[in-house]
Length: 498
Ligand SMILES: *[C@@H]1O[C@H](CO)[C@@H](O)[C@H](O)[C@H]1NC(C)=O
Ligand SMILES: *[C@@H]1O[C@H](CO)[C@@H](O)[C@H](O)[C@H]1NC(C)=O
Ligand SMILES: *[C@@H]1O[C@H](CO)[C@@H](O)[C@H](O)[C@H]1NC(C)=O
Image 1 (cartoon, rainbow, N blue to C red):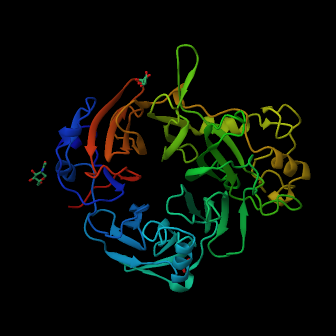
Image 2: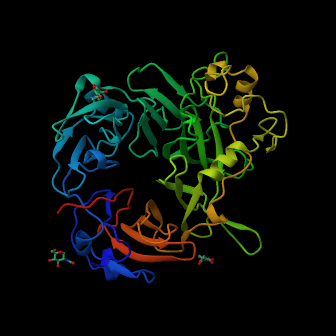
Image 3: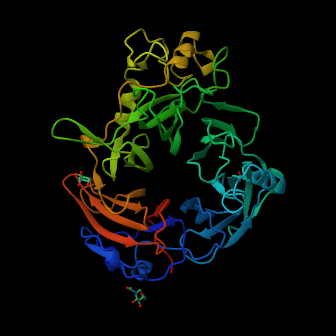
């Protein structure tokens, strides 16, 4: 089998949008670089699997929970549950529509009945073995609910659990968005108005609807027209007080010149135990910091070619819980060339940026520079910890000067540079752009070899092997005959049942 050639282990990919497949001639779109080209027929025997069910369309979110043997798919007005090891028809399908009054209102504000005014499910997370948390756009009136699973196979929505999804889910099915559930709280990067112009990073509670924490509203230094890409919980040290949630997004760069509408990619973080300030920054993050993520190719004259637009992030676990490797997929907004690149980032380099100097400017019309003044204690952005500092058990105990420093300094001065100082894979001037990635570390080899699966905007998946010395495009999988872009992929290392 062709697809088994690169790695000793069976790999299964779940891809969005899910599509019904028919065989095509792979050679008609052949790329010279690919060592192997697989048609959809071959694929069905190989390394990707497809699901033919689900007529609703509008698929936006996959929840693969292999430990519990389930795969959930969120679509338009529907949630489907499948066994994670099978490509059979769904075990269970739940219909979850928007409130009719929301649909009517959605139409009166000029939105489309088919493309906007329905409940597009955008968040699916496991609460525990038997319950799922879901949020949908609710025809431009976001809503969330809990679903229960009986006997591991019957999914049902609990109507009394339906609540507002404000701060948890966007209004629009098209808005870039990220959210994750962590210890009963939803961390989300989303807009909170139907125009989609006002976005923030929120923490809201599943159990206690009134409680929330967020980034400051209408302050461009915190977030400047952000487009969210991903979020992940990463422990920083062995002390759980240091646990943080990281957000990845792109935004208009405040530190670039005013006339230069430049887009930068960012990594931001907040402490899980942040509860906001006492006198100032009430219900606001007191630990929010962000840094620029750079993925660029150094040129001969020292000028870098920047891949500035972050499109996707994959977190590859390592033996150390605190130190996963983060892979970012970037494209460019350059008018001169089109291209995509993959850069790897170590947690050490991300932490170094957050532990380094802050960026500062004296006012909106001033230039940014490296802040060299006095830094108050405890260090702004550090999490409070009972273990190490009994005086500052909570962010409400932070001295006023720390809180006031946090009001003025969200941006770090140093950018985060990729491992090796350059991308590990680039594709420039090709017929397609890369849209999504997952990464596998095969059991074989020296431990530095990774396999990248890269989804394209014309319905393909490239399988690329990279090591410290080389990059090889092993396969080009033609997944969607329609040429639809690959928006989301999940990778499974468990075997597929056929
Ligand atoms: C796929 O597998 C089936 C049965 O295992 C085999 O008959 C068929 O020839 C295979 N197709 C391709 C394209 O390899
Ligand atoms: C799972 O979560 C649901 C909803 O929060 C809760 O009602 C249920 O008791 C939980 N089950 C277990 C076993 O913790
Ligand atoms: C990409 O195409 C542009 C315009 O045709 C060209 O100037 C540039 O050199 C090409 N870049 C690469 C890396 O091939």
